Image (cartoon, rainbow, N blue to C red; front, side, top):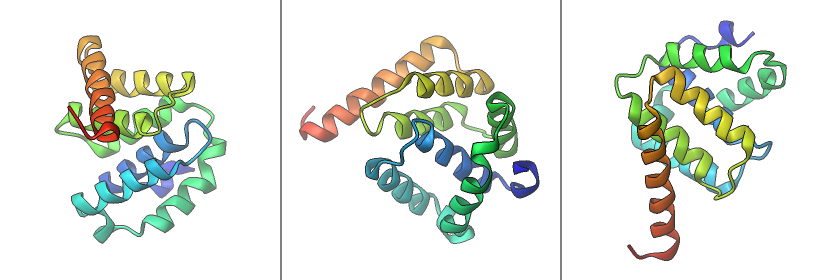
Amino acid sequence: MYRTLLSTPDQALVHLAFHCCLKDGELQNEELDFLSSTFVAKGINKSLNLKEEMQQYQSYYKNISDESSYVQFLIETIRPNNKLALFAFCTEIIYRDNNISISEEVLLNKIAGYLYVKDSENLAIQNLITELNDVEQNNAF
């Protein structure tokens, strides 16, 4: 079903972001704030109606039978030139609430695999995001 709904890189990016947010079953305010500011900064909110995209995502996400194929489809549709940046974006979403579930870790590893992110890069990005969140929360380096 999602294959007929998603045709642009921006749509796929928004749906990947929603998937990262909702992987633990909850949409946290911190995650939503981060998405909103990122989409505004990147201009995605001008080309897409984010509420409509969320409704579309909600219409099918419970029926995703093969998450690996879904993630691969999204990444292929996004066609990222900056794979580490996309991986860091997904990591930031998942780490935003400071509570990472096993299912979120599995999702990050799937994303890393489809983006051909090396294990050392994966770990470095996750550590960097953790430290940046700590700096933000404590207002100090």
